[in-house]
Image 1 (cartoon, rainbow, N blue to C red):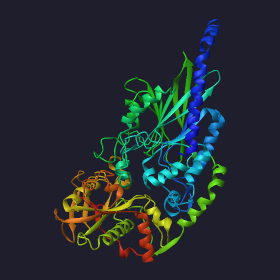
Image 2 (cartoon, rainbow, N blue to C red; image 1 turned 90 degrees about the vertical axis):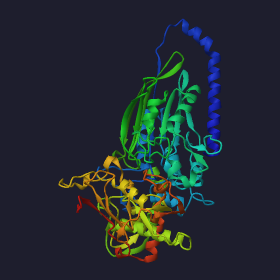
Image 3 (tube, rainbow, N blue to C red; image 1 turned 45 degrees about the horizontal axis):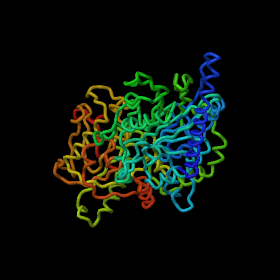
Image 4 (tube, one colour; image 1 turned 90 degrees about the horizontal axis):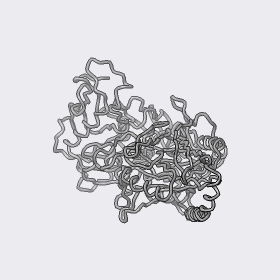
Length: 601
């Protein structure tokens, strides 16, 4: 947080304490006067806490990958410019002095706009630009923002620079310095809301982030920061906030509500634990939920210790929704008490962009549009991901080919140079397309939407078979005679597309008539049955290498090499160097779906 912001908060706290002391000195006289008048009506106050989450660099209702206004099948609209209009509406309705605006994280990663200001024209450069997300959120008037896991994707230096540029604190009560185990960021934010004739309403916002950061961004945070569980840290901080006089405690948590984890048993903490926090930790009134990219208008959770209801809300990601917590308080017996909390969401598609935000950031937007539309090569045919999740698609083979080539070059001259290199890749998008003809940066970026980097791991044939069996659990078991509906064939158990992997260089069938764990058939390397003891260099993205998705063996496998250049950038470099993108150079049919040995397609 900027120095002047810290001074402001400190000054406000001191002023507030002075007001409280003056009120205490006058109390006896006031009580004597009141005694002759009899009881008076309780004082009431209405507070509205607004919340966004998982903005992922979306300021405008624009799809940089399609070079067009954003649209989806449900007619959603996105972007902070829309949120700004919604926020203005709420402030006009409720009175700005009766509102608070917070966010639950994942702010500075996710679009070419955020990539550009992290890597192409980085905010960390001497005299560098102010991050567009900081500009927009400062202009809208955010009060506090919790850290998301993607805040760490570009390293701590970039995150700290972003923090410095924000007029609001970045909160992370469970983001601790690895050496001192003290918070590396402000744990909480407190704001007073003044009500005539009575003490102010004191609202505390506790920020919690995701323990999975320790795995997903291990390269940046290992030895520097540690991330204990949300429930553990909430149990520590909520009583402190209450003892400091907080009348309302709101948690902004970059953690979903489902109670699931995508990193298996590698950490003793649950990734999506917001509902558990509400259930286990007393003293919380509301939780703004993030991370899961789902829409929850209102979820009621009963606290086990107090029996009180805690209200949770998660607005849809990318600034498509704004959550509202309407909190009613009553002042009686010398203190404020929360009487009720109700949550709703407002929809960005119902309003237009705020012209002030548009004017503020139009230049940055135009610059990035020009950047992503640079032509870097030509394609001999159209490549698409439309059916890539259930058929071996050449467009995914492009990713594995690039990864193989980069790793082979990196290991040349080392003791591992003679080992075969294979690679994994996931069908991240169902709509990505590289058209025949000119190929631009945005075409290639849409193929690899994450800022993952490349790692080389040492794996055996037996480990790779287990890896493939786990990956094949992505498919819904389908009997040999049953009809095949491709819309219901994948995502078994709710597994997302990015947690299904192709593996290049091996040949195999996935028999979806069999139970998960027994599906990999005819697994060969170089035309012969795969030798369990054969060693391979496995080119894998850092998310998977660090345990993301809980794939077996890979996280504990020996690391041979890694780099900080994004795989997306490596793809663009590869295509630029080739000039022509021809599937004959990279496409191969390595796998197919079968049922009892018969191909599905």
